[in-house]
Amino acid sequence: MTVEGVLWDLDGTLVDTAPDLVGVLNTLLATRGLPPVPFAIARNEVSNGALGLIRLGLGSQGSAEETEILRQEFLEAYMQQICVRSQVFKGLEDILTTLDKQGTGWGIVTNKPHAMTQPLLKALGLMHRSGCVVSGDRLPQRKPDPAPLRLGAEELGVPPERCVYVGDAPRDIDAGRAAGMATIAASYGYIRANDDPHSWGASIVIRRPTELLGALEHFQ
Image: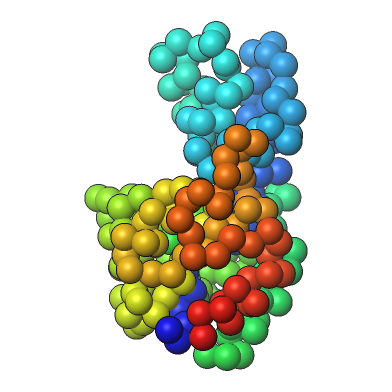
């Protein structure tokens, strides 16, 4: 296999967004007199989106109505500080530069809504560098459905079988495999303590962002 395209999940794989997301969560909890969630715990819930974080923060106390109200407040607050402390994972900026120099196309396929994906990528200087951006509301299907990944490959102009998808959740690996891509599980991402990335069926599991290039060479 010759790797001609690399597609990335966003939160927890390419960009460390947990500082901003967890910060918003704990601010909202404080306004309700609720205790903050320790960062190390909340970080690993980020891949489950706003609803996962809200449920973590409320625990068994939250009714469905209260959960939804807080979720809406969370999203509104997050939009106001979408890239305060978020940053590309250390080591990946150099890897993106290497991919650019090699002529290897790369893009982003995320379940994050477009209204949040676009300003985040703009703030990080990635919007115009990326060969494609497929947000979670662009198609009727979302990961683990393979349709968004296939669209990403199409926009890169690369056959799916020559693409690698990198993600930090089982749905990422399921989507990549279903799309006919090789897959890399990023165990440095937002992984719950009882999750085992080695059990997801990924082609390769990496522990650090800096291992990515070596993993890609495995497919050559």
